[in-house]
Image 1: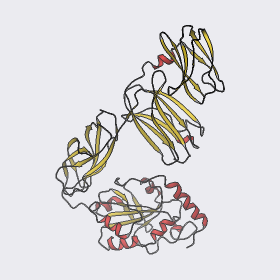
Image 2 (image 1 turned 120 degrees about the horizontal axis):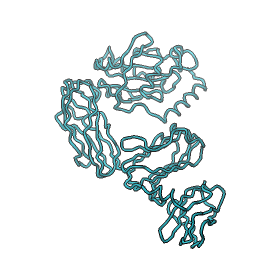
Image 3 (image 1 turned 45 degrees about the horizontal axis):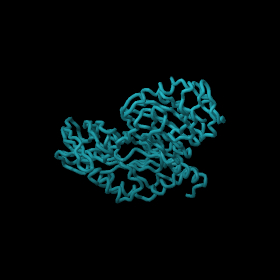
Image 4 (image 1 turned 60 degrees about the horizontal axis):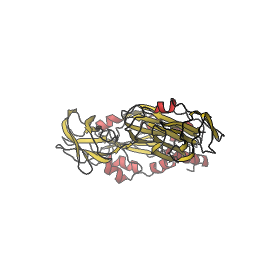
Amino acid sequence: MKLNSLLVAFALVVATVQTSFAQLPDGSIAPDFTITDIDGEEHNLYSYLDSGYSVIIDFSATWCGPCWDYHTSGVFEELYEAHGPDGSNELRILFIESDDNTTDDELNGIGTGTWGDWTEGVDYPIADNGGNIFSAYECSYYPTIMTVCPNRLLKQTGQATFNSHASYVQSIECAPATLPLDVGLVDYVGSVRSCPETPTALGVTLINNGTEPLTSCTLEASTLFGTELLTYEWSGYLETYQITEVNLGEAIFPTTSMFSIEVTSEDGYEGNNSVSATMNLSQEAATSLLRVQFTTDNMPADNRWSITDFSGDEVAGIAFGDMNESNTDYNWWINLETLGCFTFNLFDLTGNGGDLACSFSTYDEGGFQINNVFTLNNNGNWNQLDKGFSVNELNLSLGENFSASPIAIYPNPLNQENEVQLSGLTGRETRIELHSSTGALIRSWMPPNQIGTLNLTIGELETGLYIISVHDANGIQSQRLIKS
């Protein structure tokens, strides 16, 4: 069949948009579903799995060219014949047309939104209107082909060959439970970020792949170089394929480290006894005074940031839509109230609005930059990033230095002006200085010997934050000056 150019263009657009996202990751627990095929027969995923079958799910759409190419390659017909009900009887295949906007006619090769008759020569079940299942599996492109093993864990096996599909279904990883004792670790579920000298909780997802109930096992966490972090004796009761999350306790990481959690007690199969992760130690930010600088992209409503504490609670941030001007600079000052471990989270909802820029830095009580904690530019390749940091000093007197200071600046913020009026002078000042937010001296004035108000010509400044400091025998008074 020859497909019209409009359908080809539509398929290319969808493929381009969808590739920015991903489906449920390998090792996830497959959501259960029941679907009725085009012959009126119901199929329940977990019923097949509980019977010991592996299930290949082909999420396709009638207008999808790559779907059609693979569908007509004969791989699934051959697999179904060799390993389906009339073969070795270890496999089931479900073809699910997942675009609910397509029609029954298009599934049967009638109309412009199809490559041909998808039912011709196919013995395995074909179901239509599977968009809800497509969404449940968080799929985002066609075809998405997954194999779900009897233990309910899925893997994206894709447009593989007959031998690759058959080998995976018959592997120990995917085979039905045959050993009496088979402890499996599915994935790591604990924290991946910590602060120096901070106990951090570790956890795993545990599955019983054995034919007998699992009542106990020993789990050990250690770094890549063999430093033991903790040992945990788990006890409970899991029937075959039952899954539970296990909190192993807390460990202290001396540095950013790769680590693993392993089953160290007796077990029938060691190939699924280990999971690994990386613990990232957060950079120290030194003080609680932070400044976030953000330059929006072409879709500002898709941008937002937040700061969360070690418990995951948001302590500062903005919502989607709070920034409504594209390609515009925004600034926020935040003074965190507690010491500890925090995470700076950055969001670019669709990831396709063009370049954005973001940085946040920590400042001392005088308003001078101590260090830059985080800087990045996004060209549309991600949707969310995060950066850990720890605060080890509170700026408790910040408000006193900046708010109660007797000196004042006008206008503030500056617009087009290159002169400011400084008031509150006593006549005993020794010098006045203008600094950038990084502490660089821009201009200084000798003792003004003036009481009350003084006009300072500061010249043209770039947009940003500046500090005017007034020095006398009693110390320094500082005020922020913003050039907008």
